[in-house]
Length: 120
Image (cartoon, rainbow, N blue to C red; front, top):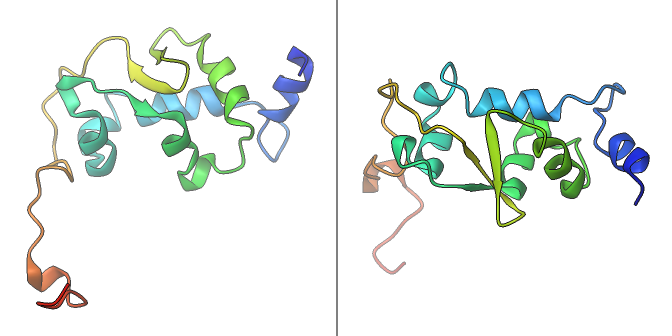
């Protein structure tokens, strides 16, 4: 795929290529401390990498295909880095205290899962 085709493939449905700023926003100091789901995935200050495929599954990212075009765009980022060709993480770990508990640390109670039975 030529670079022109990659740029076109990664364009938003409206015709503008904006996947890099959207992904950077998800990992930003403004969003990450209050995003329990993504905070659980990346571990906050642990700065664990998150798969590009997972990020592209977010509602506002679903229109960006193929994932290789998103990765190519993110390679230009000064804020995020690509790990092993398919994972994303911040270059500088989160230093702000999270305002929510990450989904990974929130215990799930049986009452929250009425579909679960003893036999499951």
